[in-house]
Length: 245
Image 1 (cartoon, one colour):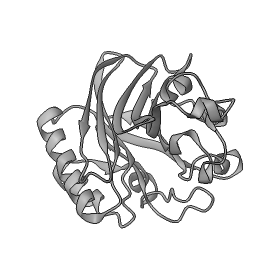
Image 2 (cartoon, rainbow, N blue to C red):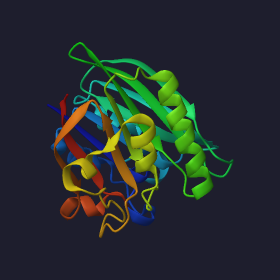
Image 3 (cartoon, one colour):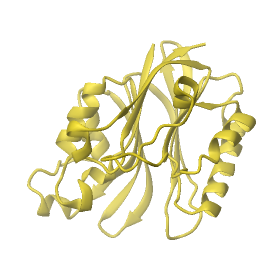
């Protein structure tokens, strides 16, 4: 059994960037006990946050979250600005054999990326892709096409594959393409009959986040809302229990 989770962590800040929530966020993620975690909006560096917030960690956010629990992690820098940069990250309890970050930005106003890892799952290679797509329909169509092309060229068709992240796909236009072009299916659709609502975290109404799989069956899946979760990111975290086919 393999447990995975995906979460847009909003650069480690609460709503309206009022306070640092990385410590609570790390605690909640550790409670999920996931083997592989897909993170979006991860702050790789910001030179001013430590000056403004006494509890801001002294390392990259993915390193802070992964420390002592997920011994293997990679980060993909997407958006770069004067004070630092942010992007996607994958944390894993299993060795990461290879990683590649690809720029899939549709225009200069939204820097988006696709982070690909090959993970050694007890001798079996599992391909994992973490994605964060843009807000506008034209850009999302281009990013979906780039994702499909990348998988076709870069992932063996018989290899187990997980693609997770924030696709900003509230109209659920991706799922048909992912199924038809790549043979991949959303875990919540497989288990519950429809994709999960994940935004806003306080009262999820929109289906923005996804976990797509190929080569796995789904034993269980959850949307993590309410209680301590709603004081963290504006997105809800998703998790799934997978079993290899």
